[in-house]
Length: 108
Image 1 (cartoon, rainbow, N blue to C red):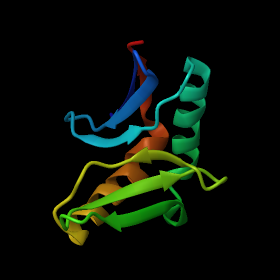
Image 2: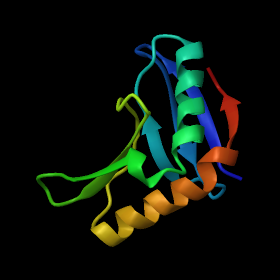
Image 3: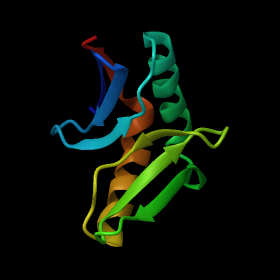
């Protein structure tokens, strides 16, 4: 089962979404408090199933990544870099499949 792993560092709270094999699917924005980070997780669980909430971009080095946006169009998570469009689309499809049922592990 996929997990959201929440952590706290000197900049604030953040989380990553990982597959059951430990592959990182997405990293969150930085949040100033834990409740805001939890709201970010809730937003991902709600919006990850909707393909319209994703945005794919290509970096100057040619690698691709995706962002997931909340209904207010603010980004809540970004993927790692992918070498091509096929790979980034597979990453998005996997996130759509696992995010809504992922459990939260609080390591903050």
